[in-house]
Length: 193
Image (cartoon, rainbow, N blue to C red; front, side, top):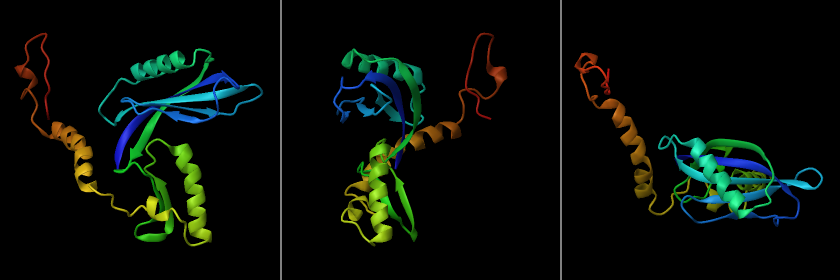
């Protein structure tokens, strides 16, 4: 699995302005929108996206700004911001979550690798795992089996994890200078100790 950082924001929206559905696009960076029922005549619109591989960006505020600009352009009647958050999601090689019996321990059940679709996969996991425990099987268990090996998995796994190797190598390689004494006033450099 590959770790990604995702961003989401919640806004007030008058009930009925946007049909209740889960929306997402196929752009890069991608965005998604979902509605959550709220009190009285107000619902909560959750907009998210602008994900990046963990450790590859340090521009969270810029991503929130872009996310808010995108959703406000799309839904001009959007109300006040309620909350914003960022978190880690895990993508499997085939973007299909691991839900079912844990490999090596048939009495442990897992649900992970939801590629940021935790609300959807959470409901799915509850249904699938319930069937595995109570009925012993589920028609979808092979699709989500944690021990499945998707076609071309190895090549994609290597590609996804090259970034990690590159980042770790940066800590192991020698620095730009051997000693702080090598610096003149006003200069800087990387010193690996």
